[in-house]
Image 1 (cartoon, rainbow, N blue to C red):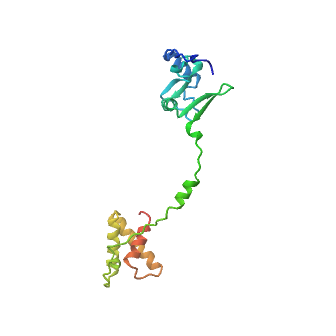
Image 2: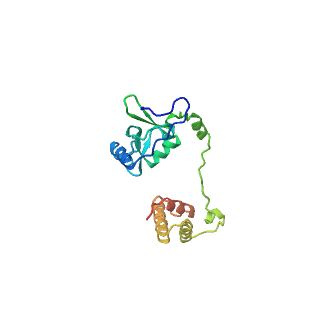
Image 3: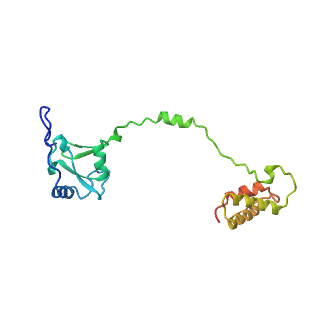
Length: 192
């Protein structure tokens, strides 16, 4: 990279800030987009001093790179670094690129978590409450519809799902299905 910086421990002189003309030249040279190949944004562009002014960097075209607001902030935070290769091309190094991911411990930890399969109990269904009385199929249909409504299914949709469920259960050889069977099949039915 070109010179810049003080010698012998003396504090470098801070060069002038970018002029609008220089910033425009930098943007035009870099294709009017962020020079970061991982970014390439076209809005909020800035001319960034590769060698900072406070470190003695010159406000000249060779020391400037076009970056978007986000990449500019990442550069100043040290999360993104620009290095000039011997061939003169810029290398953009993300701080995260240096992280070594060893996921073995995390995989073991996740594997140790027990699998929980939630189940529901239909406390409002007559079979669950142990009422034990003889019910008509109409009562079972009404109860299954009421359970669907409690889950937020619209009345017309709930009625249609329950009717479809009873038809499928009867076609499968179940002439007197329980409220739970009707409800479970209606719950699995696609939206009508």
